[in-house]
Length: 144
Image (tube, rainbow, N blue to C red):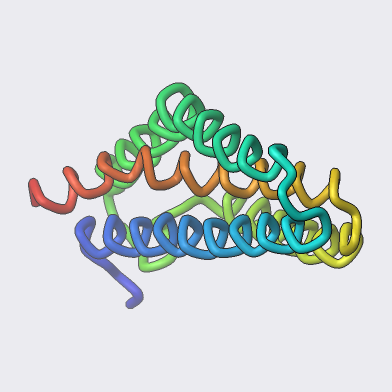
């Protein structure tokens, strides 16, 4: 009962990975738009976009790709995979904590230009890292 194929687990892991990208990219963009409304024409808004993308590329190459590869290796090594094995329990705990913290911070930083810029950089960098490292997931799904 609750058995799953390795392909299904990889597909679920990919869906979570891409969902994170979409949510954080949209949220980061909204933060930048809000910052631009607060202080129109500031170069920091554009620099924040570039910084988020640049930091994200670095994170993708040196951190998130390794996390992807490690999780895929763990999935491939499962003897009796269950539907919830696409990530470890600590991943889900960490994800929940990040969502709660993100919601709190998004409300807390309203109207504060420097904090909006900082959060936008953070969220865009994570989104970029998720997207940049996702090719490992696609390769696994493609090489079924």
